[in-house]
Length: 486
Image (cartoon, rainbow, N blue to C red; front, top):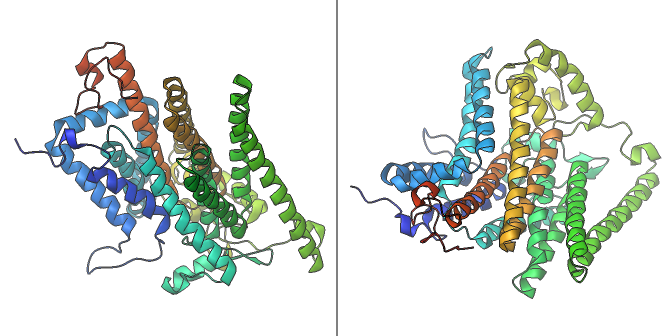
């Protein structure tokens, strides 16, 4: 029998598959999507695409030669049946919508790319992660990406020019510059194709920075994490994105809530509460000061109070048309949804059917959820919302179980993941951009694997048959039923 590519006993946090997952967590947000390289007849490639294809290919080869590897994968999926079922139903319904589309081949081209970069990536991450996930390396990959993104955003804010513009072709540069100005102020975009994506990345990664800051490994680590948090807040401010402000306030409120709960259970543990109140209160003071200065500068330029507050006349752009544009889009999309509520019109066709014209005569829908509803019908929207809801529930379940077991690192990561999922949902409502969707699925895969290990350990400690629990050396990682690796 052929020897497996990665033997079960070697499936550790130093395996090649785990290193590929870490590389994807770093490169997906860092490498600009507009910098591609074409080799002969091959499609244009980026590090994200190469790593994605390589991970999927290695997982398939591993599964072909290692039966235990495949068994462990299905045991992990079994730990979150509801979430996995919702995801399968979501993509299956989208495929059905493609089959009934008015232009099925055109719609399938977009569907298959989304399937490869989200669903198959999620499957590969779930299969590739080791039994004992070293969350410190997951944090490091994420925080290294934050350091690069925020450094370029701050540099852009200082010099007043994006340092990567010269790498963009003329068409993509035009698209990126459409939304560069808001209320007369230049908006930073860093490595992304839109300022909105910079704001989304900085805001949804803040919860992970916060939980790492609460329990740093050293004073140097605490200082570096604090600088990264300040960099994220600077990136959000430089992007001039209002929806990111909602996410930051939500994350700060959740941090304050959990700190208050800990304080009420043990009033001597007030250090974290003071840190949370200092962060949240300081953020409110900072934002209030920024708004006052912004209002004074706007009034000095002759703008009215209404215009300063953002309710005045402004141009409709591709990525941000304001609430008035989104209401108009909803009114225009509603008759099309009623016309085909079950299967829609196929991937990337809904915008043409609605016919909302944005900047430079481009057809657009400024909400990912609205676009999915028109493209693939109301059931696809319900399945997607169900998947996000179950992902949040799964993360909170992992956090609760980890707290009982004294696994505080797992608890912190799971709580941050729940805030991450909710933040991504806010942007799915207010943005049509999908660059962070693969990141959403990767983090979801990490949380699912953490839950699978908890379930296997609980079965093993309950004395269930070892084969049923799947807790073999090649499976979950325990060696005896009475021994816990928590």
